[in-house]
Length: 252
Image (tube, rainbow, N blue to C red; front, side, top):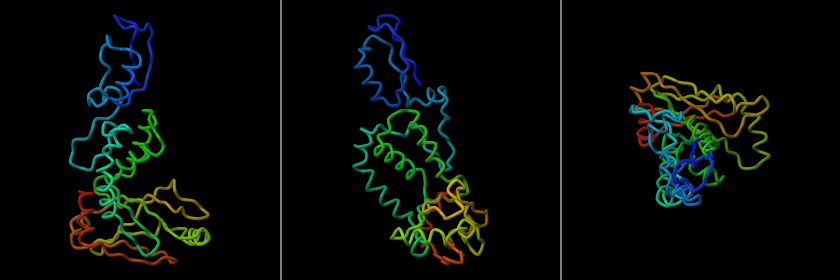
């Protein structure tokens, strides 16, 4: 929260207000609306030192995949302009990172860019403008970004009809114990988000991570496969050379 002091000096309004000002556009609109023309300029929320002093973490400087920082998020109006060119690029990127395992399991592997895109799209759809709500979205979606040595994905379990889904999602109980990433004969079991698991049926949307060993990272270029050994859904899918290349930067 930014405190704007209006009571001192030659400011035309004799009051103190506490306002949430997440964006430069919001500051400009507020200054025009309340005639702040003689008041000191409001802080720039894109200033990294100011953000750090306000309690936000500094943007990481290491070359590992960074979480999305609040300073990267644009206003809905600014994003509408960027979206015209960004959306086709993001659709192409997400298609390169979409891998099907059998007919009904689809892994959407996430990175910094896909997560930022989802945050901006959610803000646009839900008309999210308050700083605390934006911070919540950033924190929530940042959980999808892989840590060093990991791959992270949204797993969609897709069946066409409600009746089929009702049956199959019960049949696939325990799937969290049967999804693997095989690299050179060494298997790593997927870690599912426990908040998405239930006892009567599996949710159709899951969030999974694979932690790769040093050997798996070293042998990645030689081939990898997604595997399900669930008794109701046995399947294996070799990753293509293009998919291996696309995902290689995620865990390095």
